Image (cartoon, rainbow, N blue to C red; front, side, top):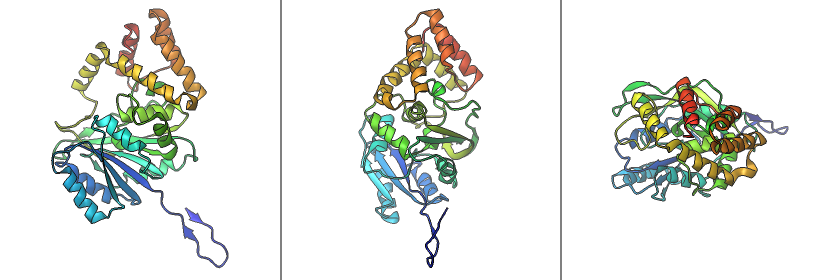
Length: 321
């Protein structure tokens, strides 16, 4: 974009938007160097890295300090995390007042970003008017511990919405980039909000408050799958088995309880449509079999896949939502 100049002055190029990369670390020294290098390779280079370390006992902090020496103090900032797990760590970082940017990008410590990751996100997010919450997410290229490709994350085709966000997260947090309006919603809800996962909460909040969500069908990073993952890829046969067991043990209902309670902090910011869906959802969850099933059908809640929706129907029948 170019800014028109006054007569006799040269036209000036508007500064590129600033991106705050939000990375949480915990004993991540094994895979951290390639991720840090991938930040330097970004085609959009107006970024700062903000790290919240949750008590690493390996060389993570030494690696970060060495990078800070090479990059400069303004390029990399490190804080001590809350020591309450990955979700609390990410939300504490997203809500810190001293962390500033035009846009915010979650980052895991063990991935490798593709060079155009930030650029692709900003192309979409800059379409959104100021003040409208917006979130970008994408697919990932799955790799093993040695960075060998093993596949792609699932391709979802149904649109993002609040009715979907009540049931599942559309995109992994490691792909998410969001604007200042979305960040303010996270701050209003608070870093201490009790939710299952930070990225699912971010998707839910943006949808609930009338925001825009962009889902990129192309991969934007290499998502490393290894035994030390705090949050791994939720795909494959074993992952489906785990989801079924979690469903029947009441895990999904417990997550629903957490989200319903957490959304009360943002109720005055939610859209009328989202409020109607939420109130009907809460009523249906408290009803007996026939009105419960009818209520969920009226809400239009859904997951992204046929198998997911079949499981959703079964969960509705047996009161597991």
